[in-house]
Structure formats: C-alpha cells, structure tokens
Amino acid sequence: MNFFKRSLIIIVSLIVASCSGTGTGNPLLGTVSGKLTTSTMAPGSGGSVNAASSAAVNVYAEDDSIVASANADSTGAYSVQVMPGDYTIEFSADGYRKRRHNISMGAKENLTFNDMLLSRPVEVVGGSVGSQILFAGADYTTGIVDGYDVTDGSHFTANLSVPRRYVASATIGNSLFFVGGYTNPGVSSVIDVYDSTMKNWSVRNLTTARQVDQVATIGTKLIVGGGFDGSGVNALTDVEIIDTSSWTTTNKTLSVGRHWAAAVSVGSKAYFIGGVHCWTLPACANNTIDIYDSGTDSISTITMPRNRTHHKATVMGTKIYIGGGDDGTNFLNIVDVLDTTNNSWTSLTLTTAPGQATIAGTVGSYVFFAGGNSLSNPYSKVISLIDTSTGIQSELNMSEGRYNIAVAIANGKAYLAGGDPAQGGNTDLIEVLDPSGPAVSIFSKDWF
Image (tube, rainbow, N blue to C red; front, side, top):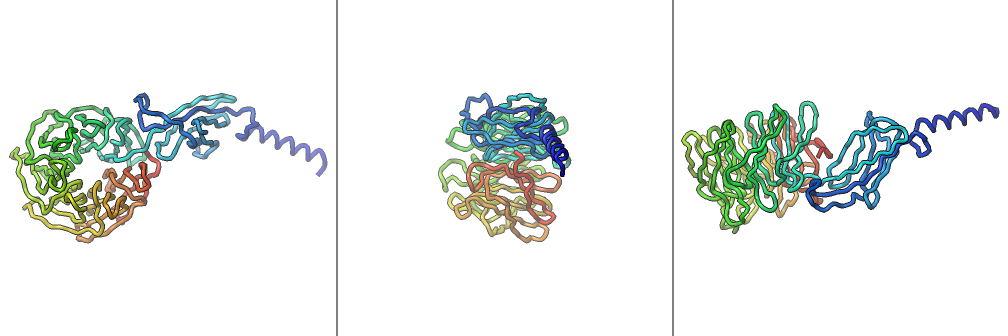
C-alpha cells in the first residue's frame, strides 16, 4: 500500500470516529449529570434522604440498546455523555424502585437531572378488575399503586390518598376498593376507589377506622367486619354494610371481636372466620364463624373444627377453603373446608404448612395457598395446590421464598407480587401461576 492510500484511510477513520461515536473526544457530545438519592419516604414527606451511592445509570436509545452507562459516586453524583437525540435514562439500585425518564439531548448540551429512588414494595395487597391488576399498600409514606393491564401490557401508577399498609381490597362491578389499613401509628378510615372504566380515583370513608385482612362483598355492598382499631386493647365487633350504589351504611355486631380473621362471601352471605378478640395467645384465638345473611339482615354463628388466626380463606363454588395461620400455639397444615349448603366440614392435610402471612386464591379448578412464614419454613417458596375437580394435591415452588405476598387474578391466571423475601428487605418480583400446567413462571423482576 502506498503512502497516499495509507494517509487517506487514516483520515477517513478519524472522521468517522469523531462523528459517529459516544467517545469523550466527540465534539457533538452532550452531558447529563445530577445527583441521586434514596429514601423510604415520599418526596416532601420529611423523611431522611440518603445519597444513592453506586446507583446504576443507563441511557437507552429508541431501540432499547444501551448507549451510555455509569455508576453514581459516594455522594450520589453521576455523569454520562451521549450524542444528540432522544433517549430514556434509567436509575436503579438494589432494594429501590427503578426510575425511567425520557430526555432529548442537543449537540453540546448540558442537562441536569436529579432524582430520588423510593424503596420497593413489601406486604402489598392485590386486586383485579377486568384485565387490570393493581398492587397497593407498600409502605406508610409513598402510597404508590402499581397497575398493569394483562391484555395489552400497559403499566400505570397512581397513589393512594393516604399512604398505608395492611390494606384490604375488594372488587364490585368495574370498581376496585382499597379499604382501611395501618398508618403507623394509627389506622385509617379511608376507602380509595379505582374506576377501571373511567380510569380515575375517588375517596370514601368507613364509619370506623380499622385494619382488616379481608373484605367480603354481596352484590353492590362492601361488608367490612371486625379488625383492629389501633388501640391495642381489643378487636372490633362492628360490621359496616356499605351499599356502594348509594354510599349508605348500616351496621351489625359480630358475636366476638375479630382481628387477624378471614372474610369471604358465598351467595347472599358473608362469613367472618376465626381470628383473635384480644392479644393473649392461645386464650384469645377463636374457632367460630359469624355469618351475615343479607336476605334476613341477621348474623348467626357456627363452630369451626379448630381455633385459627393469621389465616386466609378463599371460595370455590359453594365451598370455603380455610388454610394457613396457627391455632394460637402451633402452625397449621390443615385446610378446613366448609360446605355452605349444609354447614358441614371436611379437612385436608397439606404436605407443607403455609404458616402465617400466606395468601389464598382460586384459579381454574385449583385452590391454592402460596408463601407464608412458619418456624419450620420461615420464608416459604411453596404453592400448595388442591385440584377441586379431582381432589389431587400438588406443590409448585416460586423462585423466591417470601410471605405477605399480594395476589390478583386476571384472565384465568394468578399474579403473585411483592412480599418479604428470605434475603431480607423487600422484593419487586411478580410471578404468575398458570393453572393450565399447572406451572409458575416469572412475570417480572423489575416491574415495581
């Protein structure tokens, strides 16, 4: 090769490198810089704010390829350089929610972009309305609600009107209700209402502030019974029967106070199951069910085979499956099944005791209990399945052991979200239970 050709190749290579890369020598490069912080508190709430040291910063092109990346330093400061164009910048750190923003960069432009990363959800509650699934109640301060439409893949966020945890949920028609909860300290009377048709929110109130585990529904009525009033003295006996078509409330009284109780409905009746009426165990654990009959507007009481608290209940047809929890002394691996047509009982023994803080649901022909916390299995991966069409039991494993999981059922599948994982902290994992296998798979690792 002669001298002229070699010189021409070198000159062309330098021109291409200077005009088409993101190297630091490119005269068209712009800079995005700023400071990242972390907090468990919502912005402006007065909570402590810390530098997001080592947080990852990635800049994505429109084809989702990464064009620049960096890590924040010990003060949370970061800086990345990109060519002119439209991008998405993402901030992430272990234990915190990812943040994504669209940016437009001009030639030689300097952009300043500060952001705060909030903690991931833990002990969330789930609910579904149509094809939309929503998860809320992650913490005492942000009130963040994550929503997802399982048909078109769209993700949306909102905020509860009052941030709180240990919220109950229920669906009536096109609306999803997030009821009461714990505000640390104290309990809430708020009902946040999501209208899935209009995609908007409204706020209503309970007569009595309380934290309950489950809420029953009959027609257009929310049936909210028992729970914890924040006093730490006794569980509530009051039942609020709220007609959501007119927002009028009538009241009934349970036979005994019920906290850490389950509540479900079958036909025109609501069932308030077990729980504790005071805080001394095992003496305060309960083995009764109060049944509210909307046809006669009365409450009657039946007896369960055993004391039960910290449990969950779910309905398949005319039968109520009650599982998990403890009897005030021992964790229970027995599922008690109430046939509501004649109030008769049968019992099933699970291979693995779900323990406290399990979740329950029905999908396809299966009743399931997932996750939980017991002495022998403190962060359970197990999903216990009961095929009600055959009576056959089986187990599946989630990818991560956890308890206080949220569940939402949509399009014939169960979505299991958030919770307390074995490694501590919290998790943004969502797994989906598909009854057609049955099989469980990861739906998202970084949705929240």
